[in-house]
Length: 397
Image (cartoon, rainbow, N blue to C red):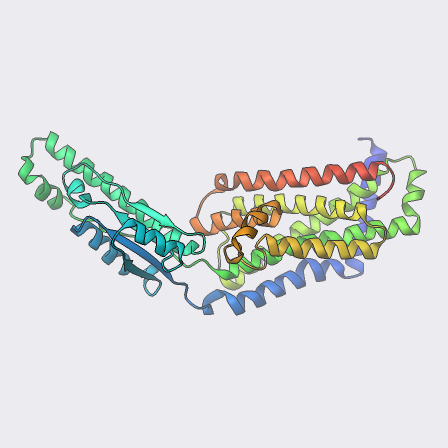
């Protein structure tokens, strides 16, 4: 890239940024609107005053021993789950599956026959979990319980085997293990995904507004591009000794920067106002970065098909709201009809929502959102390539 081209990019970008700050669209759309709406939604539907979430988990106790009963007692006595968790008993796995599919229980645990005996004898055992996408909280709690149970079973199994190998008589192994700290299935959810708070709707709506307004922020840049085409500015650029694509890239860079700033500001305000964590900061920032890239490319593609700046505004508005609805930015994906849940994954919003749910809901690290980041980035690459090809022809249609 030559010095003249770089200088042209800086001139275009500087002019665009000054214009957005001068006319007030940048502060309003990038900061005031998303933060205000995220805060209002958070106060109304999330935060500290939101109604407590409930999780109903079915239990199929084919074992009849002490272990399943003890697990339920420990879970109900856990501070994080008091007032949230309810157990329902079912006679067999088929009845539990029917209850989960019908919405009577959000998830179910199935303890097989001989489970307690197998654990006590050092043979181990496995608990099955049945889940429903309609009740994500119950699924998180059930998986967390199964993970804890599995860890306890492994510890108990190793303790029994070690005792036997050390020469402890078989009839005294159970007593010996219990006396040395492996007596029961003591369940603690401290440090698990549900520990320290519920799935906070303040996070959902904060992220949703940030994701949706990224399109609007970039949309002001797209409108500017169409306005300059109507005013003849782009025609004059064709006669200048700089590549025509500098107008698109320079303005897109400003839209990208403002949208990223907007999303980060909304994220920070959500944390400060509600004390709600969006998850691992590095993973969150990577997701936001990928979404801003995709939103910028999509809006520029939309603008390339518009004839006027008014059309660009309308197209951007339509894309932003359709993607926000289908992608779970406005309505949580699990509240959408089943056929729409798959459709959500054709939008960058849907992948960002899924990634943030993983980060905020399970405490996962950046590696857990590599797929959403890759898909969203891929959407941006495809949309951006098509937009650049259209602009390269010297026209927007």
